[in-house]
Length: 408
Image 1 (cartoon, rainbow, N blue to C red):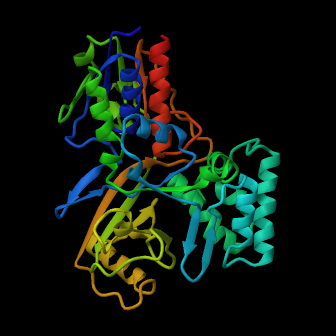
Image 2: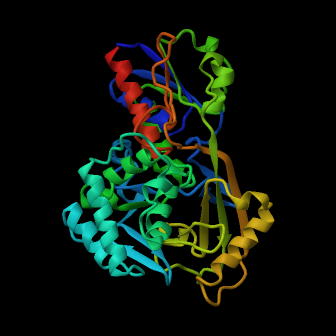
Image 3: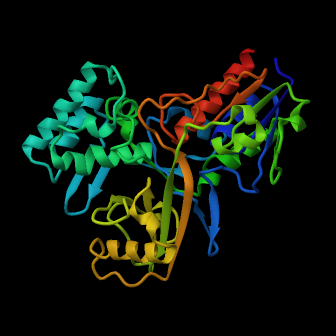
């Protein structure tokens, strides 16, 4: 069994790997260039408030992420759980029942009672999912997701399949991988009822898993080295195994032979608007139309300050031509019809992650966790796997590397 393991990067993949190894009695050293843990899903200080560099959604199907969150003792109140609820106010609403029904009955109920769809739309959605089940959610060859749903009615494409694909893959549907989208549908809508539940963080992302994970690791003899940048692998020569759990563009400096050139990236912007405390949404997460913003979250309903809304924009688009001031006011104007009588926000702040995720395109060749260098591993949401660039994809990657190290 390995004596010492170095993990470069304290994002969700690196910490998942470290937690599994520490739990097995391995002394791990985690090196993180930042003082804040979590990588591209972390807390940031904004005008004295602890918020996130991007709003993330978890779902009940994220079984490995939920297992590790429980293992490190983050607490049951760290996530607010809701049955599947997709709503574009005054246009579309789909809500799963709270009853513990089988997946097919729960989804059927949600579709049959959906608002904003006619009978033809509902029947088309049920037939579509049934057809996907017959092929076990596997395509003979990958195609753009837009082709997969091309024959679905316009309102289903606009309010159901399109938003789900963009939210899951962070890639415009005309460019997104249909097969990876099907992987997500297979594990959520087509699994048990709770698999499609929405789990919205009721704390900042660093407190949800990275910080409890660091404590878990250090109690078991490991060490998390904050504000410690590793510039070359030579400084880690003393370790039995080395895990590079960094964003793919950092590989060029750390290990030039592992540099990836075929993986494009996609941005995410999160716009925080702080309104008076009386401003609140009907549900913690609502869809947006007719503008740049795609989803709005009420942080006041999720344990944050009352009146704080977070609007998310996933993927490249026309919004990138605006500066942050212009974008912030454009988002405010988009919210006005949703909240009649809304006053001007007290503050607007924009956090833009220009390379938030990889572009999840058809037939994308993603690297293996194992490399040609002995005892050198890659971990991250971009490493080969079923999932797109999600927290679950990152966590599963870290767990897989830990398993390989323990069995080596």
